[in-house]
Length: 586
Image (cartoon, rainbow, N blue to C red):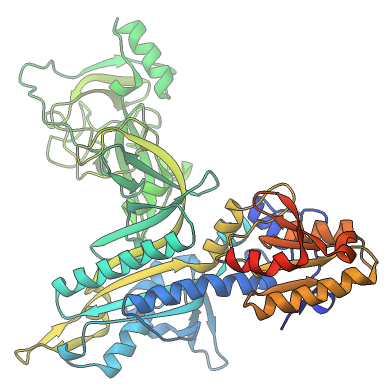
């Protein structure tokens, strides 16, 4: 049946909505696809649901082709399973938690690993039942502190999550590759450019993790890639560790006065002046004091030594110390630790600890991988207004461990030796994990193997952000007039516009709409009788149906216009040509 705009649930907006930051956010609201309900929460209107359904159809078809079967879980889940896997605490403030009238704890699920695992545990008991891959398309909930950019970063979003179950690691590899290949087909069908990057598994856990990122300037993820094929998001980037340097003939540490040099820039300028050197920030060792709040509520200070020409990357720090929360040490932290001399902290002190024992400050001391054995540094002497030079790692101080929290820069060497990396911005559109046995162990998912022995099942997890993909497609396909949907996901195949007040135009438009529908095209017919052609054209441009048929003054002579929204071309054709032309273009 032809959809008539006169009774279709649609109201377009002429002005951009307040607070809309990116094109997709502005246009999806203005064109009547979604309506905001609260920060990061949207209602879906008929146009939006049509596009969303088209994307879900592509996902379902490729999931079926990869051997996955569809199920559906509730969004409201009980606490117990998430507590068993540790995620009730690990997710922290991101979880929406609530209680029922009896005081039972529940959450709105951010993902459903626990539910999938318990379902398979309930129904399967033998290796003969495996391999198995099941999936759902379901709304997810995360209490984002700063929801932004419309559907790109919301608190409620639609996601496809699939889970594979195998009795062996070899089986997991096969299942993982099948899903990875399916993702490539999905994004190719949707016309989305993507880069597959190594990623950190985060709260999901597991041994292997890869993200599918769509390169875009509005993306909130930074990733690196080399000409030789290496790609990773910055959280998963690993620094190439320099080889150890011999230090037998190096001079001993020397303390020097350095008043008013609490920053790296002031320290370098002072050192070049007082030590008659040619130092740069890369010769200094910056010692950053961080406060970690662990899941049990305890607070711990750590000091991280990084080269002075680097800054702390907050996302890398969050990953490095997860699941603890990370923040910069406060003034109170310094007051409670008198050995911390702010601006002059270092790993070595003439009155401090002996190498290999407690650090000079009595606080756990970690270093960047570049602070390797034999490297020599200018760093704080743990004395007010004094620094030390010729402080050698491995001779004068030892670290309690290595941690990656320094920022990644263009030109840094890729860890696989494939050359220098460049930085780019991207938006995550899919993520695949080899979860291994984390969830199966926590929830007791075991099956009998071919020898009759119980073995723990190994799992994979595979997510695609359906609503995020919709927003990205909108972000990529628009102009200053409105949306321009690709044919594969457009809400309608063609929009017929009856322009003017001539009854003949409406009769021809009515007949064309019926013929196009009979030919298998999905038609939106703008039959509004008292709306001007200018308003109708403006709405057509805003809504973004890729093919538009304008039936106006030439209708009486059997002439209409074909309007290609993507190219902007408008062509006069006979009425008889319309159906064959548009049918052939599908």
